[in-house]
Length: 123
Image (cartoon, rainbow, N blue to C red; front, side):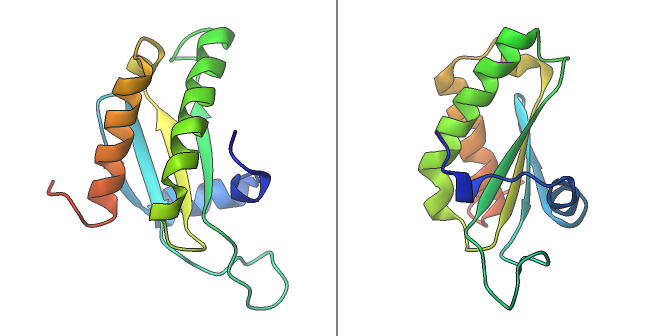
């Protein structure tokens, strides 16, 4: 489970990550990353921890499939939060093939996308 302080909840935060962040696409998912910025909703100049949100549409599958994909992505992201700068916003959008993918395939695509966004990979 992803800790509460690391969850992206507000629609404005999702929009900020998608519109102003960088993007890396893989066959099963697309990852949007907005690197460490101060939280405009927080009092003062505090830098919140890195936060992640997930978008899994009906194109991925039925409710059971979508929830399974979200659970897998939350679990995978929990282990990778340490790679992100404090204040970063991450949105992981599952593509239709993610419903048929297993845990290892999702992990490979997530790792490859994050590596590219964090400066470790070529296009």
